[in-house]
Image 1 (cartoon, rainbow, N blue to C red):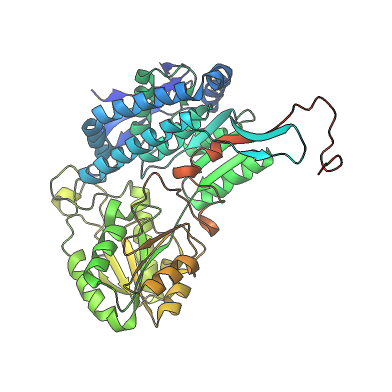
Image 2: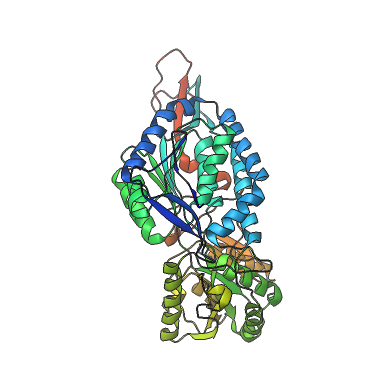
Amino acid sequence: MVKTYFNYINGAWVKSSSREKVDVINPANRKVLAKVQFSSRDDVGKAVEAAEKAFDKWRKIPAPKRGEIIFKAAAIMEKKKEQLARLLTMDNGKNLEEARGEIQEGIDITKYVAGEGRRLFGETTPSELRDKFCMTIREPIGVVGLITPWNFPFSIPCWKISPALVAGNTIVFKPATDAPLLGLEIAKIFEEAGLPKGVLNIVTGSGAIVGDEITKHPRIKALSFTGSTEVGRKVYTEGAKRLISVELEMGGKNPEIVLRDADLDLAVDGAIWGAFGTSGQRCTATSRIIVERPVLEEFTKKFLKRVEKIKVGNGLKKGVFMGPIINERQMKKILNYIEIGKREGAKLLTGGYRLMDKEYRKGFFIAPTVFTDVTPEMRIAQEEIFGPVVCIMPAENFEDAIRIANSTTYGLSSSIYTKDISKAFKAMRELESGIVYINAPTIGAEVHLPFGGVKGTGNKGREAGTEAIKEFTEVKSVFIDYSGRLQRAQIDVEY
Protein backbone atom coordinates (compact mmCIF):
# COMPACT_ATOMS: atom_id res chain seq x y z
CA MET A 1 0.00 0.00 0.00
CA VAL A 2 1.23 3.46 -0.90
CA LYS A 3 1.23 5.77 2.12
CA THR A 4 -1.02 8.82 2.06
CA TYR A 5 0.10 12.01 3.79
CA PHE A 6 -2.39 14.58 5.00
CA ASN A 7 -2.25 18.31 5.61
CA TYR A 8 -1.21 19.40 9.10
CA ILE A 9 -3.61 22.08 10.33
CA ASN A 10 -4.26 23.14 13.92
CA GLY A 11 -2.31 20.18 15.30
CA ALA A 12 -4.26 17.57 13.33
CA TRP A 13 -3.61 15.57 10.17
CA VAL A 14 -6.53 16.32 7.88
CA LYS A 15 -7.68 15.64 4.34
CA SER A 16 -7.88 18.47 1.85
CA SER A 17 -11.32 19.94 1.27
CA SER A 18 -10.78 19.12 -2.43
CA ARG A 19 -10.54 15.41 -1.55
CA GLU A 20 -7.94 15.17 -4.32
CA LYS A 21 -4.52 13.57 -3.96
CA VAL A 22 -1.39 13.61 -6.09
CA ASP A 23 1.38 11.02 -6.47
CA VAL A 24 4.88 11.72 -5.23
CA ILE A 25 7.33 10.13 -7.68
CA ASN A 26 10.88 8.89 -7.14
CA PRO A 27 12.73 10.65 -10.02
CA ALA A 28 15.23 7.80 -10.29
CA ASN A 29 12.67 5.19 -11.32
CA ARG A 30 9.23 6.89 -11.41
CA LYS A 31 7.91 4.66 -8.64
CA VAL A 32 5.12 6.17 -6.54
CA LEU A 33 6.52 6.87 -3.07
CA ALA A 34 3.37 8.27 -1.50
CA LYS A 35 0.29 10.35 -2.08
CA VAL A 36 -0.20 13.86 -0.71
CA GLN A 37 -3.16 16.20 -0.61
CA PHE A 38 -3.85 18.36 -3.66
CA SER A 39 -5.16 21.19 -1.57
CA SER A 40 -7.52 24.06 -2.27
CA ARG A 41 -7.56 27.75 -1.39
CA ASP A 42 -10.01 26.87 1.35
CA ASP A 43 -7.37 24.66 2.99
CA VAL A 44 -4.98 27.60 3.09
CA GLY A 45 -7.71 29.68 4.72
CA LYS A 46 -8.17 27.05 7.44
CA ALA A 47 -4.42 26.99 8.06
CA VAL A 48 -4.32 30.78 8.35
CA GLU A 49 -7.23 30.73 10.78
CA ALA A 50 -5.45 28.15 12.95
CA ALA A 51 -2.21 30.14 12.88
CA GLU A 52 -4.04 33.34 13.83
CA LYS A 53 -5.71 31.69 16.82
CA ALA A 54 -2.39 30.25 18.02
CA PHE A 55 -0.36 33.44 17.59
CA ASP A 56 -1.25 35.38 20.73
CA LYS A 57 -0.49 32.48 23.06
CA TRP A 58 2.69 31.46 21.21
CA ARG A 59 4.20 34.95 21.10
CA LYS A 60 3.73 35.30 24.87
CA ILE A 61 5.64 32.11 25.65
CA PRO A 62 9.11 33.30 26.75
CA ALA A 63 11.57 33.06 23.88
CA PRO A 64 13.95 30.75 25.82
CA LYS A 65 11.05 28.30 26.22
CA ARG A 66 10.27 28.50 22.51
CA GLY A 67 13.93 27.75 21.91
CA GLU A 68 13.75 24.66 24.11
CA ILE A 69 11.02 23.16 21.89
CA ILE A 70 13.18 23.84 18.84
CA PHE A 71 16.18 22.16 20.55
CA LYS A 72 14.00 19.11 21.16
CA ALA A 73 13.08 19.06 17.47
CA ALA A 74 16.79 19.09 16.54
CA ALA A 75 17.42 16.13 18.86
CA ILE A 76 14.61 14.18 17.19
CA MET A 77 16.08 15.01 13.78
CA GLU A 78 19.42 13.59 14.92
CA LYS A 79 17.80 10.32 15.99
CA LYS A 80 16.02 10.03 12.66
CA LYS A 81 18.88 11.23 10.49
CA GLU A 82 19.43 8.07 8.46
CA GLN A 83 15.72 7.44 7.98
CA LEU A 84 15.21 11.03 6.83
CA ALA A 85 18.23 10.88 4.51
CA ARG A 86 16.98 7.77 2.73
CA LEU A 87 13.53 9.28 2.31
CA LEU A 88 15.14 12.46 0.95
CA THR A 89 17.11 10.52 -1.66
CA MET A 90 13.95 8.81 -2.86
CA ASP A 91 11.90 12.01 -2.76
CA ASN A 92 14.46 14.31 -4.39
CA GLY A 93 17.00 12.07 -6.15
CA LYS A 94 20.30 13.33 -4.70
CA ASN A 95 22.77 10.69 -3.61
CA LEU A 96 22.66 9.35 -0.07
CA GLU A 97 25.86 11.08 1.01
CA GLU A 98 24.47 14.46 -0.03
CA ALA A 99 21.12 13.62 1.56
CA ARG A 100 22.84 12.93 4.88
CA GLY A 101 24.62 16.24 4.52
CA GLU A 102 21.34 18.05 3.92
CA ILE A 103 19.71 16.48 6.98
CA GLN A 104 22.74 17.52 9.02
CA GLU A 105 22.40 21.06 7.70
CA GLY A 106 18.78 21.08 8.86
CA ILE A 107 19.87 19.83 12.28
CA ASP A 108 22.62 22.45 12.47
CA ILE A 109 20.40 25.42 11.60
CA THR A 110 17.71 24.20 14.00
CA LYS A 111 20.22 24.01 16.85
CA TYR A 112 21.79 27.34 15.95
CA VAL A 113 18.49 29.18 15.79
CA ALA A 114 17.15 27.55 18.96
CA GLY A 115 19.90 29.40 20.82
CA GLU A 116 18.39 32.69 19.65
CA GLY A 117 15.68 32.07 22.22
CA ARG A 118 18.20 33.31 24.79
CA ARG A 119 19.38 36.18 22.63
CA LEU A 120 16.92 37.92 20.29
CA PHE A 121 19.11 40.93 20.89
CA GLY A 122 17.97 44.50 20.69
CA GLU A 123 20.14 47.56 21.21
CA THR A 124 20.55 50.08 24.01
CA THR A 125 21.76 53.58 23.34
CA PRO A 126 22.15 56.80 25.35
CA SER A 127 19.37 59.37 25.21
CA GLU A 128 20.12 62.99 24.41
CA LEU A 129 17.99 63.92 27.43
CA ARG A 130 18.66 63.47 31.16
CA ASP A 131 16.99 60.64 33.06
CA LYS A 132 15.80 58.90 29.94
CA PHE A 133 16.62 55.40 28.63
CA CYS A 134 16.43 54.19 25.02
CA MET A 135 16.41 50.68 23.57
CA THR A 136 15.09 48.51 20.75
CA ILE A 137 13.37 45.16 21.04
CA ARG A 138 12.45 42.55 18.44
CA GLU A 139 8.87 41.35 18.18
CA PRO A 140 7.18 38.70 16.01
CA ILE A 141 5.32 39.78 12.89
CA GLY A 142 2.33 37.42 13.14
CA VAL A 143 1.25 34.74 10.69
CA VAL A 144 4.01 34.15 8.14
CA GLY A 145 3.78 32.27 4.84
CA LEU A 146 6.70 30.05 3.82
CA ILE A 147 7.21 28.57 0.34
CA THR A 148 10.21 26.32 -0.34
CA PRO A 149 11.73 24.49 -3.35
CA TRP A 150 12.31 20.83 -4.14
CA ASN A 151 16.11 20.84 -4.39
CA PHE A 152 16.65 21.12 -0.61
CA PRO A 153 13.34 19.86 0.75
CA PHE A 154 14.58 19.51 4.34
CA SER A 155 17.26 22.08 5.05
CA ILE A 156 15.59 25.11 3.42
CA PRO A 157 12.33 24.56 5.36
CA CYS A 158 14.44 24.30 8.52
CA TRP A 159 16.17 27.58 7.57
CA LYS A 160 12.77 29.28 7.55
CA ILE A 161 10.64 27.42 10.11
CA SER A 162 13.02 27.55 13.07
CA PRO A 163 13.78 31.30 12.93
CA ALA A 164 10.10 32.11 12.43
CA LEU A 165 9.16 29.99 15.45
CA VAL A 166 11.81 31.18 17.87
CA ALA A 167 10.87 34.77 17.04
CA GLY A 168 7.29 34.02 18.11
CA ASN A 169 5.50 33.82 14.76
CA THR A 170 3.01 31.21 13.63
CA ILE A 171 3.35 29.58 10.22
CA VAL A 172 1.52 28.49 7.10
CA PHE A 173 4.02 26.44 5.10
CA LYS A 174 3.83 25.04 1.57
CA PRO A 175 6.54 22.47 0.75
CA ALA A 176 7.58 21.86 -2.85
CA THR A 177 5.10 19.99 -5.02
CA ASP A 178 7.80 17.71 -6.44
CA ALA A 179 9.39 16.81 -3.08
CA PRO A 180 6.90 17.41 -0.25
CA LEU A 181 7.59 14.46 2.04
CA LEU A 182 10.43 15.94 4.09
CA GLY A 183 8.38 19.02 4.85
CA LEU A 184 5.62 16.82 6.23
CA GLU A 185 8.16 14.87 8.28
CA ILE A 186 9.28 18.19 9.80
CA ALA A 187 5.72 18.71 11.02
CA LYS A 188 5.80 15.30 12.70
CA ILE A 189 9.09 16.17 14.36
CA PHE A 190 7.85 19.48 15.79
CA GLU A 191 4.64 17.79 16.90
CA GLU A 192 6.70 15.22 18.79
CA ALA A 193 8.83 18.02 20.26
CA GLY A 194 5.73 19.56 21.85
CA LEU A 195 4.95 22.48 19.57
CA PRO A 196 1.45 23.76 20.45
CA LYS A 197 -1.30 23.14 17.92
CA GLY A 198 -1.82 25.77 15.27
CA VAL A 199 1.68 27.20 15.52
CA LEU A 200 2.95 25.28 12.47
CA ASN A 201 0.52 24.44 9.67
CA ILE A 202 1.44 22.64 6.43
CA VAL A 203 -0.64 22.59 3.26
CA THR A 204 0.53 20.61 0.22
CA GLY A 205 -0.52 21.26 -3.35
CA SER A 206 0.30 23.26 -6.43
CA GLY A 207 2.03 26.60 -6.60
CA ALA A 208 -0.79 27.89 -8.79
CA ILE A 209 -3.37 27.28 -6.05
CA VAL A 210 -1.76 26.84 -2.62
CA GLY A 211 1.29 29.00 -3.28
CA ASP A 212 -0.78 31.71 -4.91
CA GLU A 213 -3.27 31.78 -2.04
CA ILE A 214 -0.50 32.05 0.55
CA THR A 215 1.02 35.02 -1.28
CA LYS A 216 -2.36 36.77 -1.63
CA HIS A 217 -4.02 35.96 1.69
CA PRO A 218 -4.83 39.23 3.47
CA ARG A 219 -4.14 37.90 6.97
CA ILE A 220 -0.62 36.60 6.23
CA LYS A 221 1.73 39.31 7.47
CA ALA A 222 5.06 38.25 5.93
CA LEU A 223 6.31 35.98 3.16
CA SER A 224 9.54 34.04 2.75
CA PHE A 225 10.12 32.41 -0.63
CA THR A 226 12.92 30.35 -2.15
CA GLY A 227 12.61 29.37 -5.81
CA SER A 228 12.83 30.69 -9.33
CA THR A 229 13.25 34.37 -10.15
CA GLU A 230 10.11 34.28 -12.29
CA VAL A 231 7.91 33.10 -9.41
CA GLY A 232 9.80 35.23 -6.90
CA ARG A 233 8.84 38.41 -8.77
CA LYS A 234 5.18 37.42 -8.53
CA VAL A 235 5.49 36.75 -4.80
CA TYR A 236 7.20 40.10 -4.30
CA THR A 237 4.51 41.91 -6.29
CA GLU A 238 1.69 40.36 -4.28
CA GLY A 239 3.42 41.20 -1.01
CA ALA A 240 4.01 44.77 -2.15
CA LYS A 241 0.29 45.23 -2.75
CA ARG A 242 -0.28 44.68 0.99
CA LEU A 243 2.95 46.42 2.09
CA ILE A 244 4.11 43.30 3.95
CA SER A 245 7.62 41.97 4.48
CA VAL A 246 8.79 39.68 1.65
CA GLU A 247 12.13 37.84 1.69
CA LEU A 248 13.24 36.27 -1.59
CA GLU A 249 16.00 33.81 -2.39
CA MET A 250 16.07 33.12 -6.11
CA GLY A 251 18.36 32.11 -8.95
CA GLY A 252 22.08 32.16 -9.61
CA LYS A 253 24.55 31.92 -12.48
CA ASN A 254 27.57 31.34 -10.34
CA PRO A 255 31.16 31.67 -11.62
CA GLU A 256 34.31 29.88 -10.59
CA ILE A 257 37.36 31.91 -11.65
CA VAL A 258 40.62 30.01 -12.20
CA LEU A 259 43.68 32.24 -12.42
CA ARG A 260 47.00 31.23 -13.99
CA ASP A 261 48.65 30.75 -10.58
CA ALA A 262 45.88 28.53 -9.20
CA ASP A 263 46.32 24.99 -7.90
CA LEU A 264 44.63 23.43 -10.93
CA ASP A 265 43.92 20.08 -9.31
CA LEU A 266 42.18 21.85 -6.44
CA ALA A 267 40.28 24.05 -8.87
CA VAL A 268 39.12 20.97 -10.77
CA ASP A 269 37.96 19.37 -7.51
CA GLY A 270 35.94 22.47 -6.74
CA ALA A 271 34.48 22.70 -10.23
CA ILE A 272 33.37 19.05 -10.25
CA TRP A 273 31.60 19.39 -6.90
CA GLY A 274 30.22 22.84 -7.68
CA ALA A 275 28.90 22.00 -11.14
CA PHE A 276 27.62 18.46 -10.67
CA GLY A 277 26.81 18.11 -6.97
CA THR A 278 23.02 17.64 -6.66
CA SER A 279 23.06 17.19 -10.47
CA GLY A 280 23.61 20.94 -10.78
CA GLN A 281 20.20 21.55 -9.20
CA ARG A 282 21.37 24.19 -6.73
CA CYS A 283 20.92 27.93 -6.82
CA THR A 284 24.64 28.08 -5.90
CA ALA A 285 25.79 25.56 -8.53
CA THR A 286 28.88 26.43 -10.55
CA SER A 287 27.49 27.10 -14.01
CA ARG A 288 30.39 29.13 -15.45
CA ILE A 289 34.10 28.33 -15.14
CA ILE A 290 36.18 31.36 -16.14
CA VAL A 291 39.79 30.39 -16.82
CA GLU A 292 42.80 32.57 -17.67
CA ARG A 293 44.08 31.61 -21.12
CA PRO A 294 47.58 30.46 -20.07
CA VAL A 295 46.03 27.56 -18.11
CA LEU A 296 42.81 27.10 -20.11
CA GLU A 297 43.93 24.06 -22.08
CA GLU A 298 45.48 22.27 -19.11
CA PHE A 299 42.51 22.96 -16.85
CA THR A 300 40.03 21.82 -19.50
CA LYS A 301 41.85 18.51 -20.05
CA LYS A 302 42.01 17.77 -16.32
CA PHE A 303 38.38 18.78 -15.80
CA LEU A 304 37.08 16.76 -18.75
CA LYS A 305 38.94 13.67 -17.58
CA ARG A 306 37.20 13.90 -14.21
CA VAL A 307 33.77 14.62 -15.68
CA GLU A 308 33.88 11.49 -17.81
CA LYS A 309 34.40 9.40 -14.66
CA ILE A 310 31.29 10.69 -12.88
CA LYS A 311 28.95 7.86 -11.95
CA VAL A 312 25.30 8.67 -12.57
CA GLY A 313 22.43 6.66 -11.15
CA ASN A 314 19.97 6.02 -8.34
CA GLY A 315 21.23 7.95 -5.33
CA LEU A 316 20.71 4.97 -3.02
CA LYS A 317 23.34 2.96 -4.90
CA LYS A 318 26.90 2.98 -3.64
CA GLY A 319 29.36 5.09 -5.60
CA VAL A 320 26.75 7.20 -7.39
CA PHE A 321 27.88 10.84 -7.53
CA MET A 322 25.07 12.32 -9.60
CA GLY A 323 21.42 11.40 -9.30
CA PRO A 324 18.43 12.16 -11.52
CA ILE A 325 16.77 15.38 -12.55
CA ILE A 326 13.71 16.08 -10.38
CA ASN A 327 11.05 15.55 -13.07
CA GLU A 328 10.43 15.20 -16.79
CA ARG A 329 9.52 18.85 -17.26
CA GLN A 330 12.81 20.02 -15.77
CA MET A 331 14.75 17.41 -17.75
CA LYS A 332 13.25 18.67 -21.01
CA LYS A 333 14.09 22.25 -20.04
CA ILE A 334 17.75 21.33 -19.49
CA LEU A 335 17.94 19.39 -22.77
CA ASN A 336 16.45 22.40 -24.54
CA TYR A 337 19.17 24.64 -23.10
CA ILE A 338 21.79 22.21 -24.38
CA GLU A 339 20.33 22.56 -27.88
CA ILE A 340 20.34 26.35 -27.48
CA GLY A 341 24.04 26.19 -26.60
CA LYS A 342 24.80 24.22 -29.74
CA ARG A 343 22.86 26.65 -31.90
CA GLU A 344 24.66 29.60 -30.32
CA GLY A 345 27.99 28.14 -31.43
CA ALA A 346 29.31 26.81 -28.15
CA LYS A 347 31.40 23.64 -28.46
CA LEU A 348 30.01 20.57 -26.69
CA LEU A 349 32.91 18.67 -25.12
CA THR A 350 30.99 15.90 -23.38
CA GLY A 351 27.46 14.88 -22.40
CA GLY A 352 24.51 16.80 -23.74
CA TYR A 353 22.01 13.94 -23.86
CA ARG A 354 19.51 12.00 -21.82
CA LEU A 355 20.77 8.68 -20.42
CA MET A 356 18.43 5.89 -21.54
CA ASP A 357 20.29 2.61 -21.04
CA LYS A 358 18.72 -0.06 -18.77
CA GLU A 359 18.91 1.40 -15.24
CA TYR A 360 18.30 4.92 -16.55
CA ARG A 361 15.30 4.22 -18.74
CA LYS A 362 12.62 4.74 -16.09
CA GLY A 363 14.19 7.80 -14.51
CA PHE A 364 15.15 11.33 -15.51
CA PHE A 365 18.91 11.27 -16.07
CA ILE A 366 21.14 13.60 -18.08
CA ALA A 367 24.83 12.99 -18.72
CA PRO A 368 27.19 15.57 -17.16
CA THR A 369 27.54 18.23 -19.83
CA VAL A 370 30.43 20.59 -20.57
CA PHE A 371 30.52 23.40 -23.14
CA THR A 372 33.57 25.39 -24.17
CA ASP A 373 34.06 28.36 -26.52
CA VAL A 374 31.27 30.06 -24.58
CA THR A 375 31.00 33.85 -24.76
CA PRO A 376 29.32 36.03 -22.12
CA GLU A 377 26.37 37.07 -24.27
CA MET A 378 25.21 33.50 -24.98
CA ARG A 379 22.01 32.42 -23.28
CA ILE A 380 23.73 29.42 -21.71
CA ALA A 381 26.10 31.89 -20.05
CA GLN A 382 23.33 34.21 -18.91
CA GLU A 383 20.30 32.15 -17.94
CA GLU A 384 19.96 29.72 -15.05
CA ILE A 385 19.80 26.18 -16.45
CA PHE A 386 19.51 24.41 -13.07
CA GLY A 387 21.02 21.16 -14.22
CA PRO A 388 24.33 19.35 -14.86
CA VAL A 389 25.52 21.79 -17.52
CA VAL A 390 28.63 23.95 -17.16
CA CYS A 391 30.30 26.48 -19.46
CA ILE A 392 34.07 26.96 -19.69
CA MET A 393 34.89 30.55 -20.64
CA PRO A 394 38.32 32.06 -21.39
CA ALA A 395 39.57 35.23 -19.71
CA GLU A 396 42.53 37.37 -20.78
CA ASN A 397 43.52 38.41 -17.25
CA PHE A 398 42.20 38.95 -13.73
CA GLU A 399 40.24 42.07 -14.62
CA ASP A 400 38.63 40.36 -17.59
CA ALA A 401 37.67 37.39 -15.41
CA ILE A 402 35.95 39.69 -12.91
CA ARG A 403 34.12 41.46 -15.74
CA ILE A 404 32.83 38.18 -17.13
CA ALA A 405 31.86 36.95 -13.67
CA ASN A 406 29.78 40.09 -13.09
CA SER A 407 28.17 40.07 -16.54
CA THR A 408 24.88 38.38 -15.53
CA THR A 409 21.75 39.63 -13.81
CA TYR A 410 22.35 37.24 -10.91
CA GLY A 411 24.60 37.64 -7.90
CA LEU A 412 24.39 34.75 -5.45
CA SER A 413 27.71 32.93 -5.14
CA SER A 414 31.16 33.23 -6.70
CA SER A 415 34.51 31.53 -6.36
CA ILE A 416 38.10 32.27 -7.26
CA TYR A 417 41.15 30.01 -7.23
CA THR A 418 44.46 31.82 -6.85
CA LYS A 419 47.60 31.86 -4.71
CA ASP A 420 47.85 35.64 -5.04
CA ILE A 421 46.50 37.14 -1.82
CA SER A 422 46.24 40.57 -3.41
CA LYS A 423 43.97 39.28 -6.17
CA ALA A 424 41.98 37.24 -3.66
CA PHE A 425 41.19 40.36 -1.65
CA LYS A 426 40.44 42.39 -4.76
CA ALA A 427 38.05 39.64 -5.86
CA MET A 428 36.25 39.81 -2.50
CA ARG A 429 35.64 43.49 -3.17
CA GLU A 430 34.87 43.37 -6.90
CA LEU A 431 32.72 40.26 -7.29
CA GLU A 432 29.03 41.15 -7.37
CA SER A 433 27.64 38.35 -5.22
CA GLY A 434 26.32 37.82 -1.73
CA ILE A 435 28.75 34.94 -1.15
CA VAL A 436 32.42 34.73 -2.14
CA TYR A 437 34.66 31.68 -1.80
CA ILE A 438 38.46 31.79 -2.07
CA ASN A 439 40.00 28.48 -3.21
CA ALA A 440 36.70 26.68 -2.60
CA PRO A 441 33.68 25.87 -4.79
CA THR A 442 30.57 28.01 -5.13
CA ILE A 443 28.57 25.58 -2.96
CA GLY A 444 29.09 24.84 0.70
CA ALA A 445 27.32 27.47 2.80
CA GLU A 446 27.60 27.13 6.58
CA VAL A 447 24.55 27.84 8.71
CA HIS A 448 26.16 30.39 11.04
CA LEU A 449 26.85 32.80 8.15
CA PRO A 450 24.16 34.78 6.32
CA PHE A 451 23.03 33.33 3.00
CA GLY A 452 21.65 35.31 0.07
CA GLY A 453 22.52 37.30 -3.01
CA VAL A 454 22.40 40.61 -4.83
CA LYS A 455 21.01 41.84 -8.15
CA GLY A 456 18.44 39.41 -9.59
CA THR A 457 19.07 36.80 -6.91
CA GLY A 458 17.19 38.44 -4.08
CA ASN A 459 15.82 41.56 -2.46
CA LYS A 460 18.53 42.22 0.14
CA GLY A 461 17.18 39.69 2.64
CA ARG A 462 19.46 37.05 4.12
CA GLU A 463 18.79 33.69 5.70
CA ALA A 464 20.76 31.80 8.36
CA GLY A 465 23.56 33.20 10.47
CA THR A 466 23.20 36.43 12.39
CA GLU A 467 20.53 37.58 9.91
CA ALA A 468 18.23 34.58 10.44
CA ILE A 469 15.88 36.31 12.87
CA LYS A 470 15.63 39.67 11.14
CA GLU A 471 13.22 38.72 8.37
CA PHE A 472 10.79 37.32 10.95
CA THR A 473 10.79 40.20 13.43
CA GLU A 474 9.77 43.84 13.68
CA VAL A 475 12.03 46.29 15.49
CA LYS A 476 10.34 48.42 18.14
CA SER A 477 12.07 51.47 19.59
CA VAL A 478 11.32 52.09 23.28
CA PHE A 479 11.90 55.36 25.21
CA ILE A 480 11.63 55.36 29.02
CA ASP A 481 11.58 58.79 30.65
CA TYR A 482 12.04 58.61 34.41
CA SER A 483 12.66 62.34 34.93
CA GLY A 484 9.14 63.03 36.16
CA ARG A 485 8.73 66.01 33.86
CA LEU A 486 8.01 66.70 30.20
CA GLN A 487 11.17 66.60 28.11
CA ARG A 488 11.04 67.46 24.43
CA ALA A 489 13.65 65.76 22.23
CA GLN A 490 15.69 68.12 20.04
CA ILE A 491 14.26 71.09 21.98
CA ASP A 492 14.90 70.71 25.71
CA VAL A 493 18.51 69.60 25.44
CA GLU A 494 20.66 70.51 28.43
CA TYR A 495 24.44 70.49 28.52
